[in-house]
Image (cartoon, rainbow, N blue to C red; front, side):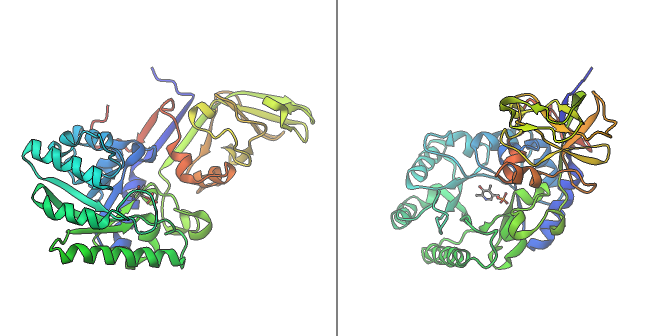
Length: 379
Ligand SMILES: *Cc1c(COP(=O)(O)O)cnc(C)c1O
């Protein structure tokens, strides 16, 4: 018996179609970014779908995520790039996981693990070209010296960096980052090291800046069918992408109230007219942002906006006086948006946030359902 009061439906065919679209736009191999449980869509099901659809690489932040990919039986080249000192580099090298090298300290630990195993580590050198997070900046020269000394312990598979403002076409910082990337690449070449894969582009650069594609692009948000930046790049639909995640919930209670009825904690809103209210069985413990105002649900072919503050397990919507919705009916919290339902973009705007945060924050309390079924056993 299964009863869900809320669930997430993942359209794996949409993910496959988006990968095909991105592959075509990129003209170079695609690395599918599946960190954070594939942006909330489910790590293993999405990783396998992406590979089946033509992605040649997988990328994650954490080593745990990469190891979970290997445990599922997926053997495609996989890189983990957020591997702080103290990470289990022995297990990583054993499992054929490529490692991002973001500092000298990390490089030294990876080399130690390689010595212990008697096996070369596959690394991708991360350079800081202007994002100012991980990657070599001031340590670059001392890293090159260390690399010269220990070059037999590692196979330099890649050189990579990350854009800070790729979603802003024409922004001068992008050209500066591109130039620095090329210069640091030249430094390596002068040492006789020529990695097979130079990679710099995220989804936004994949979609709009062919000069930054190099040998591989790392696409995250776009493979899930979502725009990297609604304001600068337009909607998911305008980019030819198909949103893969639909969040549904059931109406718990429907009730008629008079105009002027205050709703929810703090009574921050009251009904404007006599109307019907719907109590939706999902709340901030499930990942609905508590501050959301201006989004809502789609039911009976129309939008019903949030009224009052989002609670832990529920929120209230104004269904309108004519609504025929009743307790137990499914409502769409967000979805593809093709029929007028709210989208993850709408919820991002309603929460002073972005679609990335909306899809990644849906909690494990909400079951994921795959349509069509995944090709790998993910139980
Ligand atoms: C998350 C991430 C990406 C993917 O970014 P999108 O904007 O989702 O395409 C690419 N590269 C790195 C290093 C990342 O951390």
